[in-house]
Length: 345
Ligand SMILES: NC(=O)c1ccc[n+]([C@@H]2O[C@H](COP(=O)([O-])OP(=O)(O)OC[C@H]3O[C@@H](n4cnc5c(N)ncnc54)[C@H](O)[C@@H]3O)[C@@H](O)[C@H]2O)c1
Image (cartoon, rainbow, N blue to C red):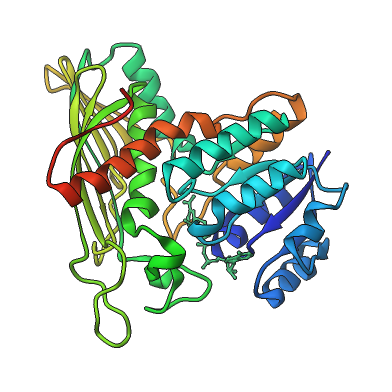
């Protein structure tokens, strides 16, 4: 049985972390911390456990074996490193951190402290993604030539626990990056996972086109990110992340190979489609992707607890996300310089 502390009790904690730990027989929710104390109190009342006055107080509690870090992006590294140094395993939400030095420090600290660090890249757990990875490995569509992966919705202002155009997701200081780090990191990590390959060069255009604060001025972070990724294995493709897909979310990935095509989560009728070179279509309806309006169990917390119970490295280790984070930061350099940027070489 693992004792769990929750740091940050906003939307992602409330819809995924806390209920998924609550439903796991090997996890016990020991306590909560949030800058907004009443939010921590609501969770303690609903799920049991205590409220801490400070993060330090939580981290000093021997009843806590591991913490979930679900705070604003700019605090991921600081809180994660403090928790690791206090002897706690950490499940940190994406984006891992806001610069590569912090990401690397998180990984190094976990190693130094002998603790596990997992990052909440839940897209790897969506069943059709795992199945696509397996099919590609089995050579079902031959050698992968190109891909397009997309994650877009109408924006985080209807998602956050403090909704509206004043959300921290639009605040450069707290979020640091916009949709690139919010949705783009999901698909950047995912494409490497599905293809079992590494991004080695990026060319990106990252813009703030439409989102505005309440006073009508443009938000301080990006609302659209279009990236071209070149993979070590020779494939090339696009990663599009957007907060301006008004009306319908797009969470799709399409992989084009020498012997066919795999389409994932791009048809509401089936989660995975394999289209052979002969145009024969095979459909697999495995599951529905989680959306802001369709919250199903992510499986992330179960995987974290299972690994801790077994004393092994959880899937989606911090180290395994570093290459995707380098592609994200490389994309920022690319858009600033107007040049193609090599990464992970
Ligand atoms: N894996 C996913 O699909 C996914 C989805 C949404 C959000 N997230 C990530 O989860 C994190 C939290 O996002 P959210 O949607 O829950 O936001 P939110 O605005 O709903 O909640 C954030 C909470 O963190 C608290 N907080 C902020 N800074 C804090 C600090 N220093 N110490 C303690 N509490 C603090 C706030 O008071 C608030 O309660 C973000 O990094 C976000 O990118 C991941």
